[in-house]
Image (cartoon, helix red, strand yellow):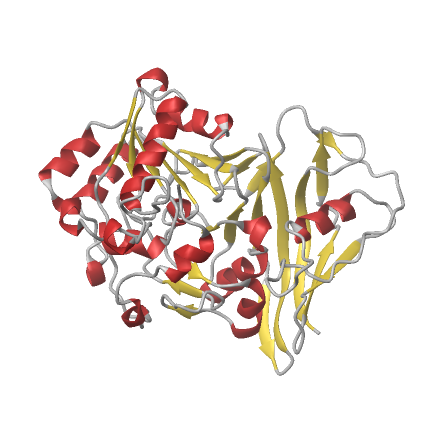
Length: 430
């Protein structure tokens, strides 16, 4: 079974103390600037927590890999290798790259793939990333799935160290994507699809308070990022995962503002962002699954730091749900067919929210906190703005969501906002 997030962080990379790196001076690389696809395939990126019975997401991956002829290559190098797993010999308790690879291969077969195989690249098998046998195995596949864990292990195992250039295995996967294959991933497996400034860790409150730092850090609350990025399969925006359950909207906004990015795709658990024609002017993103994807738009945002702390004004918040689309070139969200504009009729005030980002220090905190506030605001006539505060103080932060002339909510239900498009979002110290 895949590792829990807490165990993932404890089981850090071998010698990871040496990985608190000064990375800002790295040269331009193939991974950061890959060639434009000639006949692009597609991406299916899941925000983590992919449930075994999610037939919609597994089915989407298999369909794009050829349906009943699909052959899925499973990569789990983000997991610890067997040599670091004390339960490696116990198939009922193991949680390493090899047994996680078998787990996902079995799931894809159960969901209808003709074949699914573990690609044996991990920290125990680094040389395999450049072997003829692994390249041949990859070339025989019609789709790929990257499992969860720690995305830095993918950097370590599939890229060439400080050069940050593709291994032969990664180059083969990139070539398959460019000619029509599907590349999917969950949690770290989705995060590694990012381009420049890929997040490596951090919590929202600490991110707002302290800002971001290039590198990989053993303190899981510290906002770190890798300037060279991940595999750069998706470059139209930053990627974040586990968004609603871990309250990561704050860290996503801070990292985007610090690094000059206009867009963040912040993925919820057990839900996929499906990307057609990635890296082209026709790039289209579609949400599939029971939760949603937050789109953070910073094209008109302004950040500043004063003695009181960090603030951000002019950003926009959208929350897209199943079937909704987003066109990267025009930054245009489009609701799914069958949804209609919500015209709020009630006057119920928005409930107070004193834990905007689901703090780990709050024993009574609820996931999807900020989304709940946004939906409540869109469902009432009583307010044009609503605020949520951080659980932490000294300093604390206030998040203000607002209805603007362009803000809309869409739904398939009479009085509940499902999709939110274009709400304003500001953050200020308090």
